[in-house]
Length: 331
Image (cartoon, rainbow, N blue to C red; front, side, top):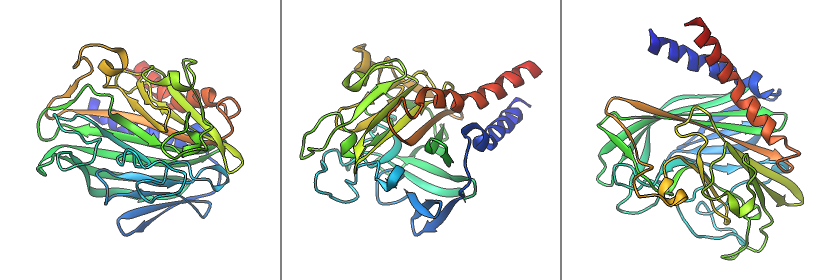
């Protein structure tokens, strides 16, 4: 009975997506294009969900306000004025740097790969949805664990919101997510949103703040409910906020937020972030059990204050919190 209720609860919370975000008119269309799924909003490309060609599924490109690209183009293509470091920083992704001893974060002969095995849903409407099942395969090709990933696309009054939900299933045996800074829900931003120049980049003008009030480079390794990065691209001030849901493990999460454009929510890398003994951040999912993560990205106009990021975050978490409180009252 409890599992049936939880399933109904999740379905109901997803159904509230439009109301919770004040979703506007303008349908989301999702079209299959070979190994990719093209996501259009108001008839224009917003992003593509790429299932093959990289060591994990990724979203690229991501088109923000005024038609500007919000993420770095490399490794998909080389563009003058962009850095070509960290080939594994592929636009927007979910993975981790130590899973049963293997890195799924990096790219190489001895690293793991996240391989989509089934597209459960790819549907547009007022809220677009892509749901896939994926195998986490070690370097030898053997599956270590599986996941179900659900990505939602909303047009809101503040910009486009991407919800990114991942449930890891310990389907093959115990799964240990190791204590390393190299993870987990990540984005590599447009070079203009970097906090500092370098490696061929001369246009960095980014600023950053988190929910705890830390700013710019001080965000690295700090715990926060959300972070926001913004800057000027093609004459427009645009930004991206990343939200960590209160139901996530170890919320508020730590942030692997570098000054060169990498921003990642990471609930595992405690020894790096806090200088504690290696292993304190390990988390094991026992065979047959599962663990869920829920994040969101808001691609918005303006800075954190003008975009109202703090209040938007509160609105994002309220519907699920209200459902849980109602359910508790019925027990």
